[in-house]
Length: 81
Image 1 (cartoon, rainbow, N blue to C red):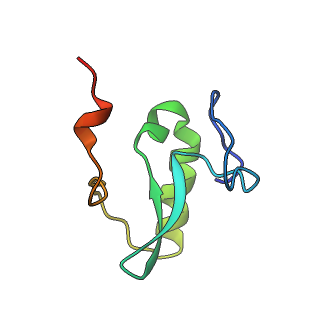
Image 2: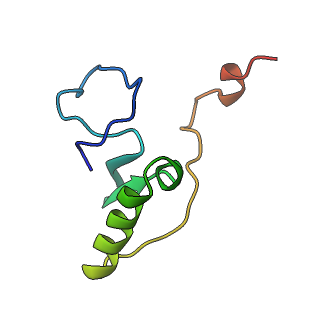
Image 3: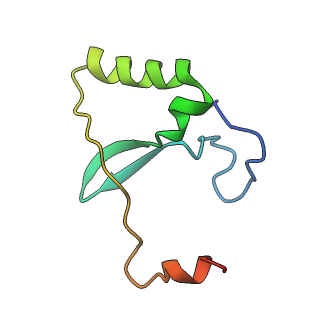
């Protein structure tokens, strides 16, 4: 999934790696995982199916979750009325 990049994605630190913002590797509490945004299902259904089938075929755990703001961040600061 590192090659799938929707239009309008900006570069930055690590941009040469080319991860989609919709499917990114992370380490959470010492566990290696891949976070797949459900938006991928709407934008590219075949990519979503690929990821889900890959997880199933390789007997990987899949969990539905939501990301919480990092401690010390101010999520209301990004909201503008």
